Image (tube, helix red, strand yellow):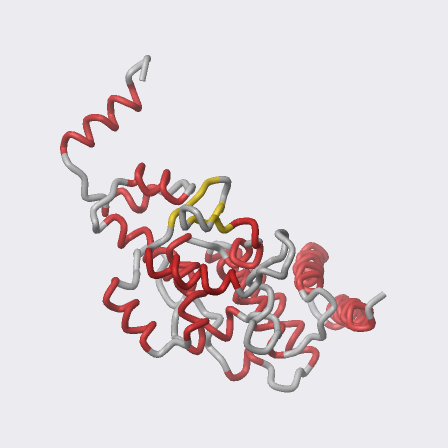
Length: 270
């Protein structure tokens, strides 16, 4: 077994024993913390627990879970990290893990704001940010993209079971990057290692350096499409997603489209 994995698991057991002996937490609360830490340790893939690995994990779950679930899982990792008395504990020095925006409001980056952010990003960072933005990618979807998922013929990525075409600018950047991976097998996860130093790509570091939020970036894709304007049905079809009702008030559609939508919903032969 990987030595880091063994150590991480042992530390988790010691921490849970500490909670049982020294804390006033209920048995169910301790079990929940234990389950959260099992998922955290599993995500490390044999890496040691340090400030970088914690930052990457929290960045991932912030994208994956809603507000309440994220706060619970964040609390479990925060308590474990404090107990470890970890050098460079990110929870002591950074506020990047708190939710920046009220989830009841739809805050987003305009096209002009995104262009301003990208001015200071490196060439490779621009590629990653644009891929996530245009394809509406979660962190897990980003890391899962394989060489076979890009179609050079029609400039599209295969995501969520559909082909999503990208802008001419992103198509050009993607082709240049994918050609540099021509010696890799088709199932190679293209965004696993940085071509600059062959180290694992850390979205947490990239988004922090560029002062961006991945949730807000993904939300921006939808809002900017609605402002074109595209309908919610158009966007769902374009990106292979199912948008929530909170976007309906931002839909700029014609009366004809609204009537057609009602027809589709209620007509027995529609």
